Image (cartoon, rainbow, N blue to C red):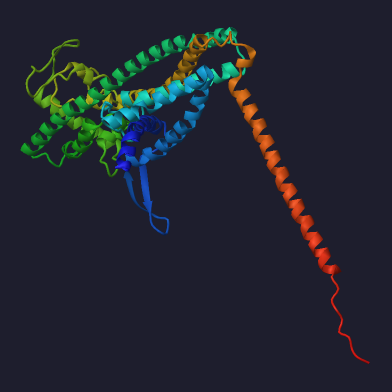
Amino acid sequence: MPNSSLHSFFDPYLQFLRGAAYSLHQVLEGLGITSSSFTEVDSAGKIVDSYWSAEQGVYPVLGALIVLTILLIPFVSLAAYTINRTKGLVIFYALLCLPGLLNLTGFYPNILYMPQNYNINGTGTLGSEIGMIPLLLIAVVTGWAGIILVYDNLKLTERFRQYYDHLWFPTALVAAYFFVADNGAHQNTSKLNEIESSTQQSSRYLLVQVRKYQDYCKANGMINSKSCQWSAYVQWQLTNTAESTAPLFVQLAPNTSAEYYSRSDHNISSQDIIDIRKEISNYNQTLCPVKTLSKDIKQMAPLSSTCEAPPAKYCLAFPDGPEGLVDRYIITQPVALASECIIPTLVAAKPRLTKLFHEFEKNERAKNYRWLYFLVIAVAVGGKVANSSTKLAEFDSRPPENRRVILRAFAKYSTRSFRLMRLILRIVIHALASFYKFTISASAKTKRVKRPSNASNG
């Protein structure tokens, strides 16, 4: 029963710090400072297993917060004593013990400080909003206690408060900077998502046409032609591109059009690529013929389920060379297979997507740094509150003997402690000296004692 009561008393504080630890660990992991990835090694030092555990990863952060809180309690106690002597201490410890007492009586609310989800290696993920409250509260209390002790023991005046306000006001400008930075990051993310979606959709669009072309090859006995063989192995690449998000597209997507025409296991010659493109051009001309009526006038094939005009966002690049192999403005023509404009567009999209993705990563990492900046601002908020507390407690009107409370108490008890230690040291030295004298005296007496001699009768 006593153990159960003790657990109930300390449980609110443990949950409070545990939620804070998860939020802080999430941010630090996004910065690469902590990790939820672990490995197991055998007796020879070789890695035999690896796993992820957010619970295990949060233990060091939780331990650090517990140590910080234990150190913070006497620090805040000194500030409370400075504010209102014993009454201040009583109020502080009453507030400190209130959550535990409420939990013992069953009146403490069930506050969920833990995040609903934890993102392993989640750059830009900031934990839960409720989990941030404990960290902000710890930061505010630290700032409050620190300024109280500094203001009193350095005998500062209203002038310090004015200087503090001058440092406080620029935080509004920093907030404006963050607003502009967030707006730019949001626009970058929107553009990234737009290009990512466009590459996926255009890959799916081309994949459907390639499969139709493969069926055409089988129906017409052309399966051994270069372009028909290409239609078989390119589907793997297009499927991956269609399902790849920006990080995978940047890492795995081909850098050149030639890589879209090559097999995954080996490259093909430039002439083979030209042959493939010529066969595809003949296929388009067969199913969707373009008739030249005059030098400036062409008659296009009517739109149908076979002859399609690809959406403009899928065809943002001109066909590859050499000049004259295909119509430069093929995007304006209904075709059965739009590889000539979609493949160059996919190639052109990669450097743009790469740049936007790197900018996105930079912005996501900045979120973590910005979140830590808010902790610093919370400390500054605590200092601002402390300046108001010193006004309410009328520090400036206190007589000199009532200022520098902690330093005076420290000096007073340090002097008494020094005197006590000096007295104890004197007693010990006197006792050792007396014991030494007693030992020397006893030894001398022993030497002066004469032993009796044996008399012999003559």
